[in-house]
Amino acid sequence: MKFWQRIIVAAPVLALVAACSTSDTGTDAEANVGRYYAVSAKQTPFYHYGPQQGNGPDQKLAQDTLMTLIRPSFGYSKVKLMTGEQGYVASEDIHVASRALIAAATAPPPPPNATSTVQKFRLDSNDPRLIAPPEALPIDLPEPTPLPGTDSSPPP
Image (cartoon, rainbow, N blue to C red; front, side, top):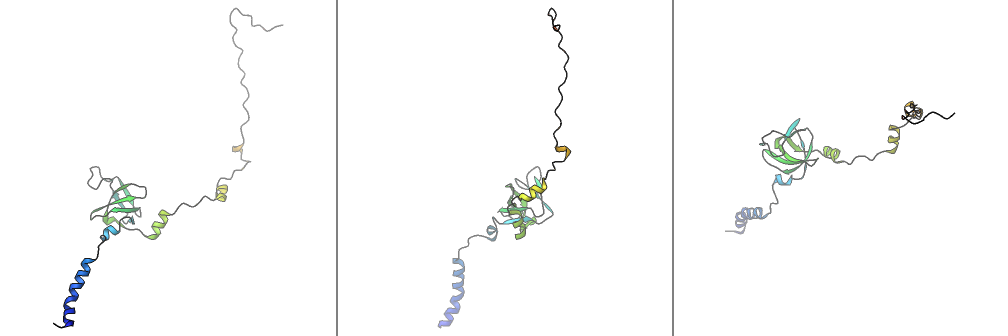
């Protein structure tokens, strides 16, 4: 056999050995664990213990509800909602969340603006509802009834 014929015969064998020797760190489904997902349907049932639990879904998730994937599966995937609740959602009803949805849901709340607070709760000191009511007058109580056998007449 000539040199080039040996290379042509050995090339597929070397390619097969090289393909088998690469380490597979995980499947595509495992690579998506921890990524943000969102509900793609108008609403989807959410089960705390699985879709076969006896009392039906625990709640319905609205479209674009954000969650992270814990364990992907063919029928129902285990997810964690942004509230911290864990449960199961139909795999066909979720998709990878858009960057805009993730940014909107995970952005920190804006700091309170001092000027907007003053304008929002401005008090008008001339408002009659803010004037304290006048002090109540003392109530005239009747004279106590004198005890029998005592002289309670006023002095002359």
